[in-house]
Image 1 (spheres, one colour):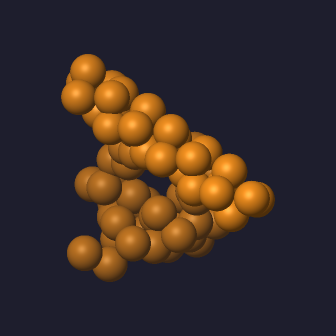
Image 2 (cartoon, helix red, strand yellow):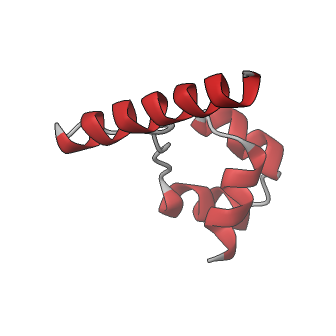
Length: 69
């Protein structure tokens, strides 16, 4: 019985997500914009990834990924 109830819940959630997407709602976590040029410039000046992240208000991983590409 619990498996049946769980499958009903899963189907209702998926139907709701499909409905929201059909209405044009954006799903998921919003993307964070980063000024790549500024991050690269700061890195070239010798700033650490941590300090760049703090100044730009993003994560260290985001800065690292942006400066590598």
